[in-house]
Structures are given as structure tokens and as C-alpha cells.
Image 1 (cartoon, rainbow, N blue to C red):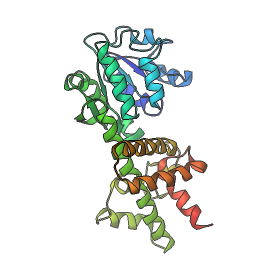
Image 2 (cartoon, one colour):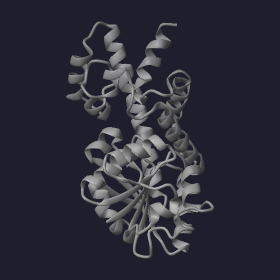
Image 3 (spheres, rainbow, N blue to C red):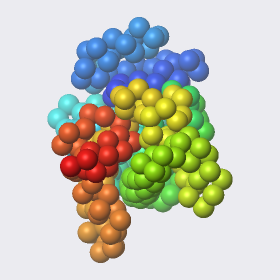
Length: 298
């Protein structure tokens, strides 16, 4: 396949490179020249304009930081829809995490231009992007998903079709709201045990075999020195940033308000990450343990 890929950051770059490794011709573009250079160095192709990226593309994939960026890319003057998208038989795939209403607006305008489009935000973080084990949470028509399935399967292990346009975004923020709450709870529990002289490693192993088990314990332990290869082992550098988690929690709260759904734990998680981001916004979201410990020392 010829694939156009927009957004070559921490998530987009490894996703695009997995497509390159599978033998596809991938033309990438990023507003950061360094990010684009890294992609080309690893075997991808770069282009300096949207029309050049789209030339001959059978699929367009985007991984962007915000709804505003996604709307500008697809709907803006000189954007993807104006320049022919992925052609009449191709598919547009937005993997960004954005507001559901933005995803619906983009998809409806894409359809009015004759393009199949899905929203396909991901779960699995940078590690999942590198190892091609991401979960894709898809909203849109089945026809669009079937066109996208080949490319998605090369970047991830699981694909869930959760509903129509925008549904992927709703499901993603539900997941990340839960992720934030169990990360906070895990950090609190490990910190409490450590304050009483317990070994966080032994405590983690006990809880993994008990009713407190969760993904944060199994895959992303927030306590330094407990689990190899996670951000906590490198002073919380890399991974899924606190500011990005806060963005997702804000999206969740907006969605809750529109649906008149009560989310008391989600609201509290947003408040805690809001405070945490003031000092540690650039660190991985598991660094919430730093704020818990910091507050105790006041």
C-alpha cells in the first residue's frame, strides 16, 4: 500500500515505522523538522506539503495532539479533503484522541466529499506503538473499518468497533478516565505501604494476585525500582505525558456534562492531575506518585 501519515511524534513515529517495516511505502509529514528527519532516517519518505504527502495514497493516517489540529489538517484551507484525501477507494483514519463532536464533524464532511473515514484512537502507549500491540478503538462505518483493517493490524493487536462516527473517541476517554483513577489508587496504595516499611515490589506482587489487581500494577507500576522498562525507572521521562492525560480527562468531563452523567471519581482524578501538571506536566502520568508524596511532606 501507499500510505500517507501525518504526525510523527512519540506515538506516530513508531506506528508509521511499523508500516514501513511491513513493506509499505509510507510518506510522512510532521510540523517538527526533526521528527520528520527521524522518520526518513528509519526508512520512510518525507514531503514538504500536504498534496505531496497525499500523492497516490490509498490510506491516510493521522496521529495529532488535539481536535483543533485534526480539524485544521482535514478541513482547513489546503487540507486533506481539499486535496483529494485517499482517493475514492481509500480510507481516512484519524488515530488522535479528540472530542467526539470534532470526530463527527470531520467524518461527516469527509463523507460529503465521498471519503470513507473512521476515528481510531489507541490504547497501549508508546511501548504498544513500538511493539505493534496497540488496541484500536474504532468509530465509523463498517466499510471504512474493513478498508483500514490491514493497516491497523500492522500497528496493533486488537481492533474494537464500538459504534458510529465519534464512538471511538467516547470509548477512549472512558478507558482513560478509568486508567487515571486506578493509577492514582495504585500510587496511593504503594506509597502507603512504603511509608509503613513494606517493600513496594513484594506489595505489588501480593496485590497482583489479590482483589487490588489492575493494569497499572501489571504493566506500568508507578513506584521507582519495582518494574523494568517503565517510566518510573527513568524518573518518569517518556511514556504518556501528564499533560496528555489531563487533556483526556478534560474531554471526559466535557462528555459527562453533555450526557448528564455523574463521574465523581473522574472529576477528582482531573483535579488531582490538574494540580500535578503545574509541577510535573512534562513527566509521564504515573509520576502522580510524586505529588502524593510531596503533599504528605508539607
